[in-house]
Image 1 (cartoon, rainbow, N blue to C red):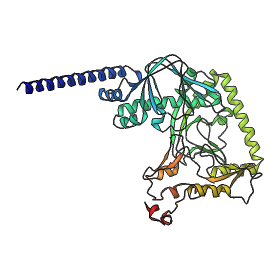
Image 2 (image 1 turned 30 degrees about the vertical axis):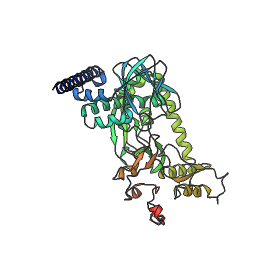
Image 3 (image 1 turned 90 degrees about the vertical axis):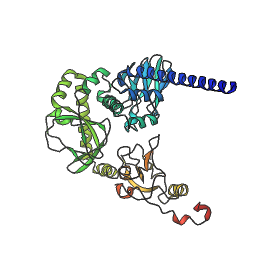
Image 4 (image 1 turned 45 degrees about the horizontal axis):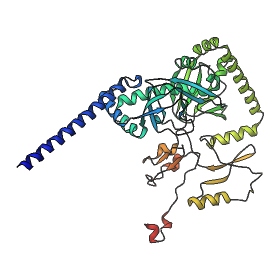
Length: 425
C-alpha cells in the first residue's frame, strides 16, 4: 500500500511539474506575442497570429557593418527589428550604389520573396548593433495562407518598398535623397496591364510619365518593334517635355505593373528639381539621337526586332557564339548537351545580333513565363538561384509546349529507353 501511495504521489508531482512547465511556456509565448504586437509592422494583427509568429521566430544579434542580405543572394527569412538600425541599399541601372532607406525598431525586411520578387533583392547592412527576430519564409508562407491580416500587413510593406526601390533603380531618380524619392512615390498612381494590352497609342497626347515597376513592355513605331523596356525603365517623357503627341505605341509584353506620374505633378516636380529637369532633358535628347540612328540603320532595326520577337531579351542571360571563332559546321556544343541531358537543349544558327549569334534555347523568362502559367501541376518552378526547371510533378501533359511563344519547349519520349529491367526500376 505504501508503495502504491508513493507512486501516486510521484505521478501527481510529475503532473504538477509538467503543468508548471506548460504554464511557463504559455506565459513566455504570450510575453513574446506582446513584444511582437508593439512592432509597427505587426501592431494590427490578431493575438492568435502573433502567438504563431512567436512560435517560429528565432532571436538573432548582429554587429555593426554586417551584410544581413545581399542583392545577389537569395533570401530565406523575414527579419523583425527589435533594436538597432539597418540600411537598405541597391544598385541602379548604371551600377551606382543607392541608399533606399533606413529602418529602425518596429520595421521589417526580407518580405519581398513572399510575393514572387525573384530577381530584385535589396542589400541590408546593419548600421548599429541590431537585435532581430528571424522567421523562416517557408514557415511564414504556410502561416500567411491562414492569416489574412498578416498577409495584408506584409503585402502593404512590400508594395511601398517596391515603389521606393523602383525609383532607386532608375538613374534619373537614384541620386535624390530617400526622403525626396518618398515624396515622389506618394504622387505615383499604380496601374496594371495584361499581356498584349496597349499602354500608350502612337499619336495620342501625353498625359503622364510612366515608370515600369515590374514586367516588360514593347516600343513599336509604325508597327516596327524598336525597343523593349523592363523594371526601372520609364517612358512618355518626350511627349511631356516637348508638348507633342506620343511617337510610338507602348504595349505590355508580359503582365506589367506601371507607376504613373500625372503631367501636372510631373511639371511641378521639374520646377522643384531643376537638376532633375536637366537630366531628363539629356535622357530625352539621347533617346532622340538613338532613334534617328536606328532609322538610318535598317539592319540594326531588323536584328533588334528579330531578337525581341524571338524572346531573346526575356531572361537575364543568353548563350551566344562568335561566328568568327566557331566553325559553321561544328555541332560539338549541341552534341555535348544531348550527351548530358539525353536531348540537345540548345541549337546554333539562331538570331544574329551585330557580330554575335544568339543560340536557340530556353529563354529563362524572368517575368511571367507562359510555360509556368500554362502548367496545371505547377511543375515548372524557379530554384533559389532564379533558374526555371521542371520538377517531378510533371505529368507530361504537354500544356507547356504550345504555351511557349518561342518553340523552346519539347516533349521527349523516354519509353524507348526502358530496354532493360534495370532501367524500368
